[in-house]
Length: 222
Image (cartoon, rainbow, N blue to C red):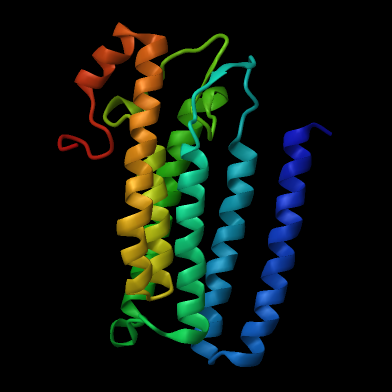
């Protein structure tokens, strides 16, 4: 069993354990509607986790250089902050819960999560063995400009924004949307800056031409 598979199994066991524990707490203390929302969220989250594990491809060569500059940690922590706040806001405190807009806003959140999953699926499968959550370049690296990467350079970071937006809407929290605006979006912008500087350094004119022919995350706009 290689390290990646072992880590995936550990993450899945932890996720299922947390899911069971939160399910128990939710069943004991939450109204039935809130309980159903929590269960639906964890169900789709676990399904997507399994899908992402199945489509992941191990790299063909080792990473030659890592230029992440803590951008991955910044993005993960800001996204985790959205999740934790949204959950607490929805389950207990209700500081910024948008009750008047339910259940429509919750349904909209699941739709956004579905769109995010489709986008992320296409991005990961297009990258194939070059997919890496960190900013890194492999010993034998090829610039991917096919599929969704033909129009936008950073579909994975667009996916990150859609993911936290979906969480905020599913848990009906305008406070979580504010955290997304002031924490996650700056993390994404910083990540894009780090990655583009790194790729320009290593791929030079090839990446510069690609930048001129594509947008960052929104086709035709930015």
